[in-house]
Image 1 (cartoon, rainbow over the protein chains, first blue to last red):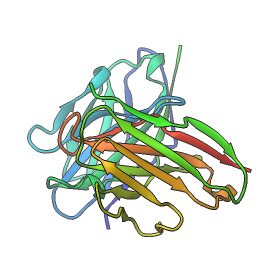
Image 2 (image 1 turned 135 degrees about the horizontal axis):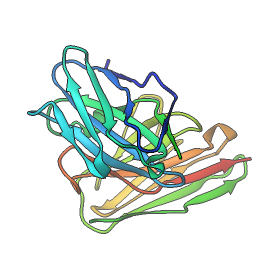
Image 3 (image 1 turned 120 degrees about the vertical axis):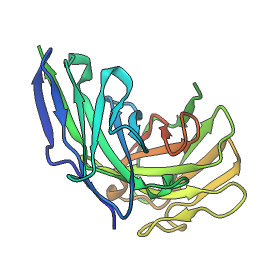
Image 4 (image 1 turned 90 degrees about the vertical axis):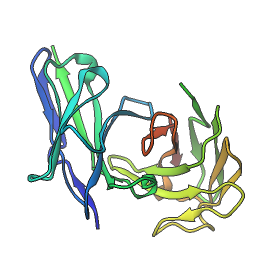
Length: 116
Length: 115
């Protein structure tokens, strides 16, 4: 069975510093990998995805993530954090073929707190 | 970009009652899903809403408890039946195909509190 691990319940970072939110996964075959963000009292918003190709994926709001097949990781990064980045971040994985949205597994989420 | 509207956004319900949540998409979509997000937890897929046929439920979810309708390609409802406090959650409608293959777009969610 596929799974996603987000080892940190919360990440604290000062504004202007780089941030990393960790994610590791387990899936049979090649994965599709996603990051979603949930702002307070709002639904989830798509940030970025890895399907194939370049291991470094760039997404919305200056976020990027690097697919590392040997370490089965897909960590989310941003060079300079903003207070407005404070939110709940979810990593998700599905099997790597089209039409697998119903087979998406979400991690437990990591709360990012950016302070001045 | 396309919009997904969910109603109600929140509600407080009494034990034993049922509540129907509506999801309206402003364009036709093939795949619609219902998720549950329990307090402090991740998202769990309840079912895939199939247009014109019975929904496909995930393990642990049954039609008697969570009946789903999908009369057309833009609209679906989820009913939470005979509610108990354990049903207090955020229920999220989502669709694929609006921002890319395999990418889910979510509604804002319906926060239910069962007393």
